[in-house]
Image 1 (cartoon, rainbow, N blue to C red):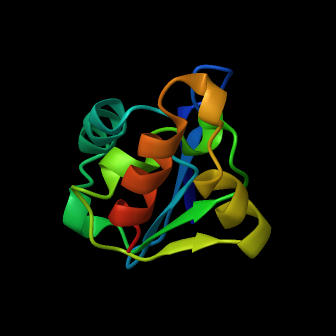
Image 2 (image 1 turned 60 degrees about the horizontal axis):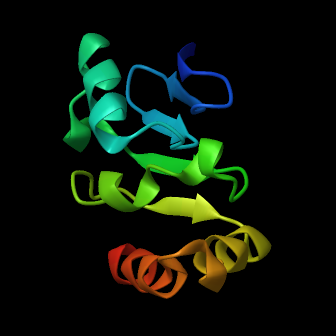
Length: 108
């Protein structure tokens, strides 16, 4: 089993856990573009991902998920509470309603 830290910090968290047959991304806090770029450096194509686990809804852990789902077709594993919080964007944040709708439309 291999653990590859793609990003760690307030600007984005993401770890790839790999075996010879399986690749699981834990958190998608980086932008989709940056996640895909860093996966590519590890010779992992989008179709090589077998699952994404979201630990919690904070943007540094889930901020890149919506756009990343345009490029991958694997399941997303997320607890019900985290999923509810991920969809519940702030209305006074400027684009809360539209972001929530975009997230719901992108859900696998």
